[in-house]
Image (cartoon, rainbow, N blue to C red; front, side):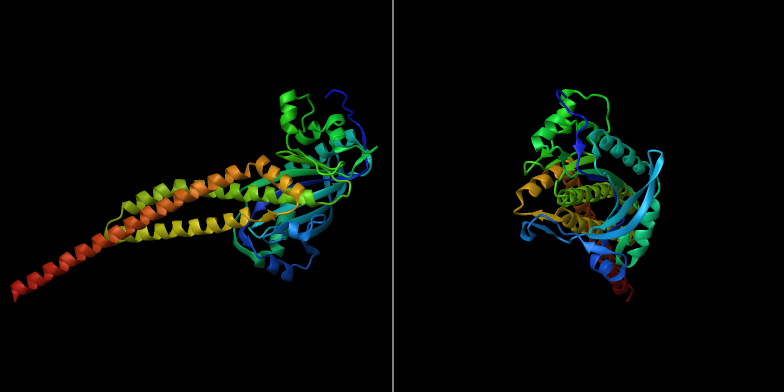
Length: 367
């Protein structure tokens, strides 16, 4: 980047490495607040006006306390927390204070800290601890089969002060956002920075697929919180897309098995399979609606743009469309099986009537 200053100083900041798990059909957040005794809060945006943005069910944050993690060849203190979403997702987060330092050190620190995502600890132990705490609030628990990580780097400003456009022009943001330290092509650099948004002169957010940069002189977490909701929506839609794909494959084998039966056995198999598909369709339709309506931004133009950009970057609309297409296939399969069950029942009744008529005729002849 021509004229780029790779090492301006920052006024302070923090980096958070997060991981999302899909652990249940739903989590009763009111039940969590009643029974979990560790420090907990309902998520509330700091800067946005109350009526400008609304959570369908504000997530609950649990303070897991200070802990230590090892990265970059040393052990460092970090802050651990968990965020619970009512649609069954849990996000673990480990946050590291960056302090006042230069930009090169920030990039190095983010790269080193990001490596904790490759370690089993502290993730495994903290997830088990949170699940034990909230066990009474979990509805239809499932074993987490899909995990999504994201790293958020928040900078409180530059010294001397830089406006958003100056940051984009003078600071090489690409290594932090991608983890790549070889020079990228102009087209690749443009693609990395295409989701750069700003509202005030000195704030900025650049949304990446696995890392995001937030420049927020006030230190408010609003942008990171909105990005976190979009990230959780991605997790849930990918989880249900995976579940539906598995179910649709298994459905063909179950249909063939049902068709292999005769008489009442086939009818019962059709009815049982149709009932199972109806339940699956109803459950996923319900949870997908809760996921898609998790956050509604009305009047805050900046947060609305950030949210829309995040949904687009994470391809949430694409995953949502895929889930809805699969749901249509499940619905069509349910209708077909229901029709076959009804047809099998009708044939069974017709045979029964014919048998009864034949018996009546035989009795009459014998008498």
